[in-house]
Amino acid sequence: MKKKELVSAIESFCPSATAEEWDNCGFQLNCGKEDINCVLVSLEVTDEIIDEAIVEGANFILTHHPLLFQGIKKIENDDIIGNYLIRLIENQISVYACHTSFDKMPGGNNDYIGKLLGLSNVRPFDQDNGFCRKGNTPFETTFLEVVHKAAECFDIDERYFKCVGDPTAAIDTIGWCSGAGSEFIKAAAEEGCDLYITGDLKYHEAQMAKEMGLCILDAGHYGSEKIFAENMADFLRAACNDDDIEILESMTDINPFI
Image 1: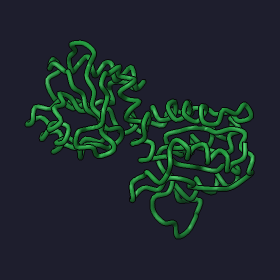
Image 2: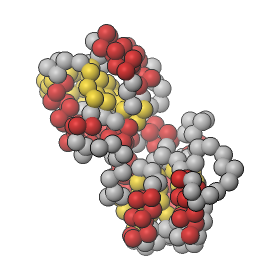
Image 3: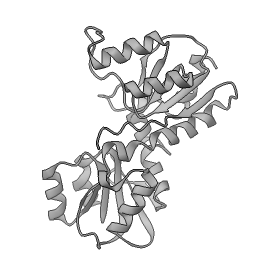
Image 4: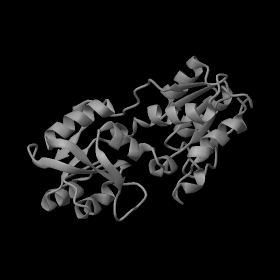
């Protein structure tokens, strides 16, 4: 498949134009051959992901997190990002990112979380910010039971979770924002959520949620977004509909926490 055809397929369901102003979606690195034989879909670029791409023969990496956010003044191999770029160029691997555009799109990260959790009536917050969703549990459940369910759905060990609230609290309405969504905690309470799921929760935000009586599940930035690979890969396979290109979900665990 030609690179421009692949990019056109990606943009057909996840247009970069819908990303936040501060974001950097699209090509992070455009190099190598125009014929793309294999795409590796991963949360982000790391040395391990580059290793995986090389082993699998992938010459295109499709990520959620952009490799480049700040302007680059020089590329050196003793700099982390610089070393990534050198390795990618040496191996003729292009990198393309779908970040906030995929978070917000229909069926993207946040809609997918609702599907995985088996929630009904999944919809944007009434005060729609583009990211947050809320939905209802199909039967009576508790905070602790939702925690167990989330660990199973996100395929992440519960030891990485941080929880705020009464484990026995009855949960009906759940709100969520994948990645770093703690800025929407107050909005979740105003939306009538019993529980809010996100990542990157800070101490004072946890205290605020506790005072408001809002249960919080901090599934971690990685934990709430590792689902990107499987979800994006499914979208891309449907959009490409091409037997000449292989689309792989990364199998590398890049969670930096132990």
